[in-house]
Amino acid sequence: MSIVEHVVLFKVKDDTDQAKVNMMLNGLNGLVSLDPVVHLTAGPVFRTRSPISNFTHMLHSRYKSKEDLNSYSAHPDHLRVVKENVLPICDDIMAVDWVADNDPLPLSLPCNSAIKVTFLKLKENVNDEVQGEILGVIKGIKDNVSGIQQITCGENFSPARARGFSIASVAVFNGVNEMEGIEGNEEYVNLQKQKVRDYLDGVIVVDYVVPSSSSSSSNL
Image (cartoon, rainbow, N blue to C red; front, side, top):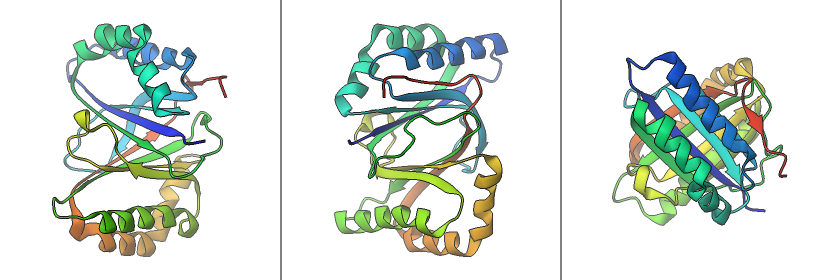
């Protein structure tokens, strides 16, 4: 199985009424009932760790194939929620899609799971060999940083809304405390950052916690 990761970041307008935000999140989370969806969660961003990012909300979902993602994207219910509940209150949206390098289990994430999403924009002169090395660094993190339950990474295959960010990863923790515990591996993490820093033109890191209102599909 080649699981497809789909992450969307939203910037809700500053003066938006909370009721409209709730309608957006309820509409997005309701899409978990669509047949192609394996997992879907949408909610407020817990923390943004990048100065170039001011996103307020995030959606993370999973599919069993690119075709299933396309079916979800084109589904009338998805198009309706985006048109009626998302676009009117958001002034910035970014999305990245990638095929996971492993089969993350469980596919659907329980409430209160903490997620760290990282997007990397590579410099123009970076070749495929270096890109492979960067992916290798990301893959090695799980074996060297305690507390990570899942980590997937890959190359973005939907460039239209990715703004040049071509590599993405998602790391899953049991909760916020476990995610914060990554700071205890600061020496190792900093070493890995040094390995890739010279090849990067931009980084976005967003922390997210699966809210209790999120649901998971039974189509497993």
